[in-house]
Length: 263
Image 1 (cartoon, rainbow, N blue to C red):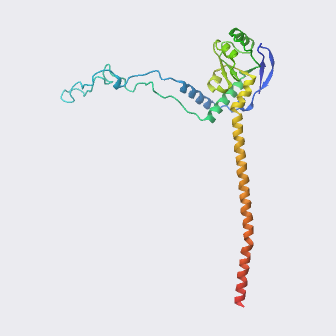
Image 2 (image 1 turned 90 degrees about the vertical axis):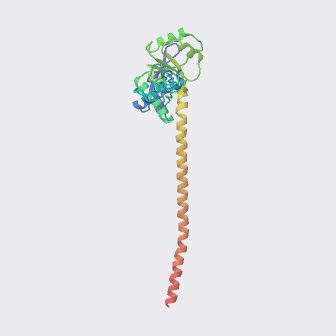
Image 3 (image 1 turned 180 degrees about the vertical axis):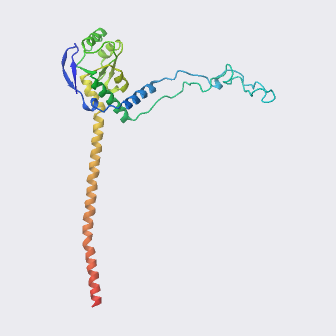
C-alpha cells in the first residue's frame, strides 16, 4: 500500500510504501473499542465526592430511646435518612477506573486502527518541514494539502520537532504526536493523518522490529531443541545397537550349556 508524499510547500513529490506489518493488519472492531475504552478510563479523574457518615458534622447522641416511644428506632442525626445527613453509597474521589490490557492486544489494536485508516485513504506523507515556528506558515501548508480544514488531524513525527509541534498546536483540532506515542484513540479520532516519511521508519523500528526479533529468537530456540532431541535419539539408538550383540552371546552360551547337559 502506497501513500502520496508532499513537500513543505504543498507540492506532490512522489509516493511512499507503507509497512505491511503496521498498515495491513487485521481489523477487529471489538478490540479497537476495548482499547479506546481503556485509554479513556485510565485518563478519567474522579471529581464527584460525597462525605461519609464520619465526615458529617453533627452530634453522635441517640435522638431518643430504643423502645417505648412507639416510633421507629433512630440513631444519631448524621444518619443518611435524616436531613443534613451523609449520602449513602455516594461517589468518592478515590475511585479507581483503570483498566488493564495485555501488550499483544494493545499492539494489535494499534496496528488495526492504522490499517483501518489506511484503507479509508486518510493517510498522507510529508517529506520535511523547516525549523521555523510560524503558525501562519503551518496553516498555509494544510491549505495546500488534500485535507479538510476544521476536521481532526494527527501529525506524526519521528522525534521532537519544535518548528512543527509549536506551529501546529495553535491550529484548532490539529494534534502533533511522536511516533513512539501512537495510540488507537488518536488514530481513530483523526479524519486525516499526516506522517513524516521518517516517522514511518521510526514506527516500524519501535513496534515491528522487536516483535520480529522475538519471533526469530523463539524459532532459533525451537530449532536448537529439535537438534538436541535428534542427537539424544541417535545416541539412544547407537547405545541400543551396541548392547544387542551381548544379548545374543548370552543366549548362545545358554544354548551351549543346555546341549552339553543333555549330552
